[in-house]
Image (tube, rainbow, N blue to C red; front, side, top):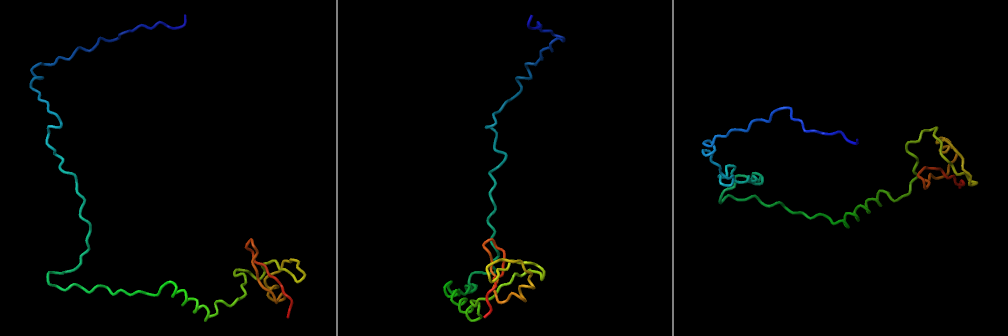
Length: 150
């Protein structure tokens, strides 16, 4: 046998049917929702936009004078002024840049006169490797290039 037989078993008696009095049903009145008046009211309206207080201006009272409009220099004029100022203070003169946060014992590569590279401290470069210039490699690290003394 593949399945157990199932039998409907009722353990309790079904509930008795509700007795509705016919007189009460006749007394009830039903209305559609659409028949009721709109008790909610109209849709809310946003308040008017804020208008700042302008002042006590009344009819016949003089209005304040409009702001003075001043047109400044154009971009080309400002660029020309900046270039002239830079020329006068020597901003276009080449200067030697030295690594800013280097300690006296920090080591940097130094390209020697024969083209080889050695590691030297900042103090050694500044005292015994002059003349020369600081340069920056493509990868971003600074190194010193020695040149022949004049």
